[in-house]
Length: 467
Image (cartoon, rainbow, N blue to C red; front, side, top):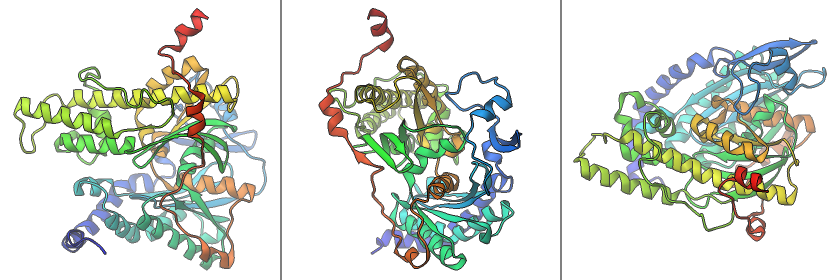
């Protein structure tokens, strides 16, 4: 039963948020009407093989001045077999996304309807409203992606759909739509794990062989995992309470920085990063979270509470009331961003030491993929890159636009499964596809990490020098 207050909200704001839908479509129309525009990709040809090239180098890739041909050679390419196409549909949370990709990793068409501005105004994601917005937009979003690809659904080889994990009501909208398309057009439907898709997106734009380490940090998840194959993951650590994305959402909301003109319409994380650029990360003390627990798990509830108390104390000191904003809000944002990075970094370093001990990754030239919404934060990317240098580990991140939820990552994960012949659901079996709101990315081996009793050195470079 829907809570009475939410019922009233739906009744009162039905026309209002449908207008918001139109507004949001206008906001995203610039990217939706220009193939591949958000990702700055260029089609180039190398010996007759076409592939996509990022015009802006990915974080973690050295020698940024390589020629286009040299870059192209390092990107994932496939044999000159018949082109295959997968339509991906994403509705796990509050963004309605659809995209068509081919077997070479080219984005043929894509469309995204973001609900961010609407939910910022509502003070957070209300699942029933997110569902209604998905229902209002999904048909057009899919049509736009197909239209941009200059194709019809008959030309598609398979339909990939996010089935787990996510908000139940949001997942249901996408799953039902994909099942309907699969039945009507007689196409196989491929169930996709949302977090696995995030982890493997980078393989669409750069050659990266298994195994590699992945940090997924978003509004709903935080986990450190070893990707062994397209559907095989060993989970070293997970979030025990709140997620980093939720922390980046709740603290700026308490700071009321959405009242700043420069932050209007931005997500909490984007607002934090923007203000932190002019703040001092050492302005406020950051406790060490889970520092005495020798595992790779994450905890952000204490961090949120710590900064809530800081904000209350500063507001009292400065006499801040109503919608007014603290004069040192930028310092608080910078300190929060630094604290979050320190916590992530500490768990990642233990994870790397564990993978060394258990020989789960190559002995040299190891890779950490950073993905999920928090991976859009360039400060965290750059700081992590510095840390990883002493572990002979490169950092690779998808372009920021591919770090947040989108249909492209779902389509690509579907393509990898199609090429392997995995998880293709045909005919009457399509009706048996179900969504799962809670679902681990893979086998959790956190207790084995604890049993390894690994202490993280404060400075790995100095230790190496002494040795």
